Image (cartoon, rainbow, N blue to C red; front, side):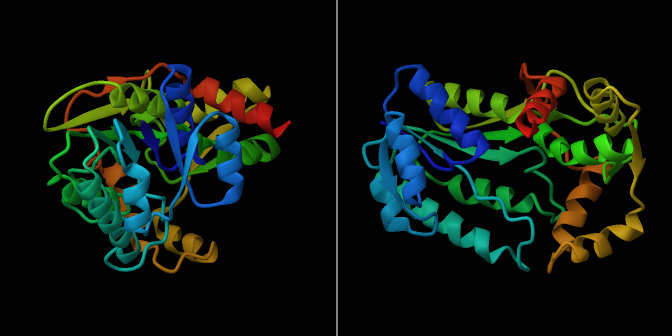
Length: 285
């Protein structure tokens, strides 16, 4: 059995569909009846479990050939990341007790960074799960291309997209969730011993100017990128409802200053930024 957590999300959904297409038996770990029905209808075995419930997770992971785990995103974590630590402890206890044949854990570019930032939640997960006896692969994914979908409305309406990534002509590794899910599914079907790190980016690095040019092409109008001044970021985040903006601020600093980066040359995916944004535009029609 191939067990997939986060199956109702973008990456987890691709993992599950890829495994099903390969003829593998899939167990969907879900929290609600809607997810249970959707994935049950697609041929999955279904396990109900909250990500903080170690006992339920252990049952979901029982007799697993491979388990895909991820940390639910938290963009406004409390000081010290207590919410994520609770989930990490539940995952650790469940995986230690169930001892799956192998584990694939979704992590992030820059997980090795020593400076605390929003992505430190995933670094904590790598550190905690790193003592498990099961073979485990940490899939460190680049910045998701899908983040650019939030620029579509502004590009369409005003021809301007505001950016936290700076300078505007500096390209960083980005990747499509489709590539992340496909690679995770491939890893779940491989065999290895011990711990491994797989770094993954898209076909080429992407700058804010590249995003603007791609949207201009797809929308058929002029689009330009504009840098948001650093001294305005905290007020903007708080206006959006953030209670603890500092980790997110430091994450953006990490990308802009270059200390959130891959340790080695990453594996390259196939899905382009244009493909991702074209699909998002079609979904909005």
